[in-house]
Image 1 (cartoon, rainbow, N blue to C red):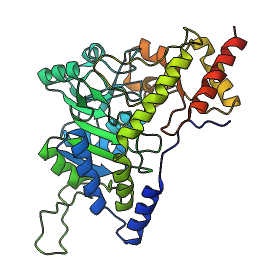
Image 2 (image 1 turned 30 degrees about the horizontal axis):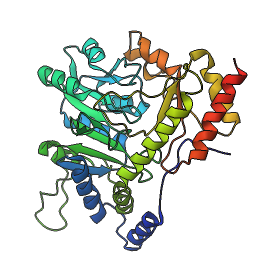
Image 3 (image 1 turned 120 degrees about the vertical axis):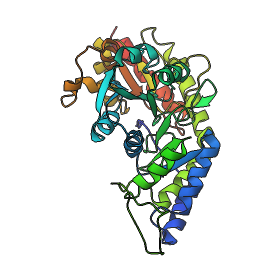
Length: 369
C-alpha cells in the first residue's frame, strides 16, 4: 500500500468550473477573484481579502505595507519563505525559539528577541494550531509592533474564538498540501483600508485604477509586482473554500484516529497538543519521537511506501545563507527539528490507510526494542 504525504481533494465540480472559466476566455484576474475574496471575508470575519499568486507574495506585500524597514522577529522553526520575504523587502530577520509542545512562537521568546530596531513580528501558526494571539497581540499593541500572521497552515483554525488572519495582516497559502488548494495561490487579509488599497496597487504593477482620464489610461504610482491570481484558479478556490469545514472536520477525524492508535504503541511517541480554547485545522499531523531513532523511523516508513517527512529540519537559523542573522542558540527549535515527524494526512485518507501507517510504526518499535 502506498500512502502519499498529502493529496488534494478536487471534485468534478471544480474541474467543470475551471473548464467553464477557461472557455470564457477571461484568463487573468476577474469575476471569480471577487467571489472568492468576498466568501473569504464572510467565512473568516475579515473586512478585506486579496487573492494572489502565493502566500510568499502575500508576506512580501504585508511587509511592504508597513512602510518601514528594520528587524522583523520570526520563528526559526518554519519554511524558508518567511525569512525570504523579510530579506527580499530589505529588512533583517531575527530568529526566535518556539514552544516544544505547540511548535509555535510564544510571548516569552518574542520578548527575548525585541530590540529598539524591531518593527514587526511574523507569527507562524504551525501545522494548523494557532499561536496564543491574545498574549502576543496585547504585548505588540503596547510596544507598537506590527503583527503579520503567516497563516499558510491554519485556514479555518481559531485562537480563543477568533480565526487566524484577523489579529494582524493575514497571509494564507493554497498550495496543494494545504487545507484548500488553487494549485498555486495565496490570500492576504486585513481590516485596514489603507493596507488593502496599497496592496491592491502593489500586486498589479503599482497601477492606481482611480487615476483614469480615459479608458486606456494606466498610471503606476509605485514599483509594483505581478502577484495576481488568475480567474480560473480563483474559481477553483471559491468552490474549495465552500468545503473548508468539511475538509477540516475530516482532518480532525483522521488526527483523532492517529492519536488513538499511536498512544497504544509507546509513551515515547508524543502526539499533537491542543491548548484549551484553540481549534486545530491539521494541515499537517506531526509527532515527536526520540532523536536517536527519528531518522531510522523516517527511512523505515519510506521503505514501506509511506511518505513521511520532517517539518522543519534544518531550522532556518542553521541554514547556511541565514546563519549570519543569528548569534544565539535556539535550544527548543534545534531539539524539535531532530525529533519531529510529519505523517500523511489529507481529507480523503481512509481508516485503512491510517491503520497501515500506525501498524508500520508499531512494527518498527517492536523490531527496535
